[in-house]
Length: 460
Image 1: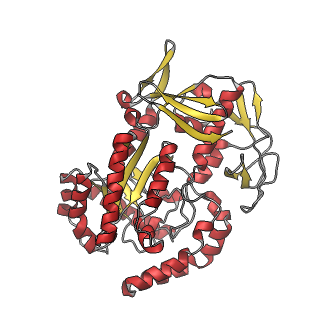
Image 2: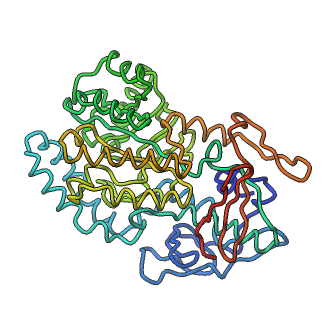
Image 3: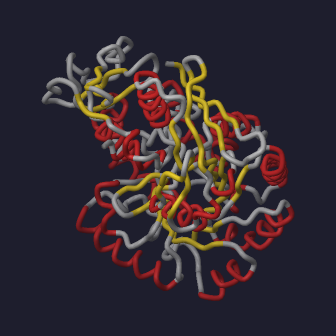
């Protein structure tokens, strides 16, 4: 049974029989599984490329079947995990070039940052990010590689076994077509002091959000501060340690800081974490005692650390649930692009909702104080509120999404006469869904949900 497919769909095991055909390469590298779906891992039948090139070897015609078992020329779970852990990034030409100077330049930047005028910082950042949107992988503005691999594999099983449909447990509670979460990282004392007004603004659209607090170095915090957020129904999480850009630079120092972060998690009575500037090193995450992390972008062209998970749904990194960032940050939109509209956000929202994913935002209190940015944010939350009503969008706190996804991971589908029923925690909010083929595309249908039909949008 393929664990990656089971974790994604929560379908009965007999529909997840996937193996590997042939002897895979000793070395890991890049290849394609159909047009536009770039994979990184070991592969049979070809020599994987050491770099992402224009004509990567395509292994989509090398599939086999052993009875009802689908055999791919690669290990699907390995390829998916390589995306989740961003292991391909070690082989990325852009990443290799960046790493030669990133450590030094990051240290200098964070050392000088308090002395640099805002205009100078913006100019330096524009130079730093110049050309990043032209990176070929992951795909900008949203990458769906994980979803495409899952859906193509399920489509092959449907087609070969001539199945009318495959049941699975729907991704979101109460038949919601997608999910969204709003998060606010507090960078400065001015941002901290603006949080009360920001909570009122979120509340005006019926949206509860989470606030990530830097525990040391940036501004004063107190139990009264984070208690004030919870008193109004909002959430508090730990944001890095002191946000100096060095959390993951040295393993020994990281372990020291991780121990202190764990103490702040207990002190703040929270189980959520996000690193500063979205720096990350997933292989070290087992040192954290959080339940969920929010530090891995879907596509990270415009983050200090390039890469991306290529996923728009939650996934586990060991014991920690990752809630990936799937939209552009407000600072990047306003100050790097110079775009004071929600057009890019709307584009990303529409794309993610088509794939029934998690639409996640970082909007800093610090950067929506001034009127122009403030008005854009009002337009964004009003747009989300409309989608909640018109598109059955579930807008939830990170802790609620964490609880749901963990419960869903414990659920099972069991036969019930000619249909299926769900057993497990929170089963009353869960829905049975079916994947079927419509031509060469996978479509999803939900039981008992009016209009419960969605096109996964994957060509076979």
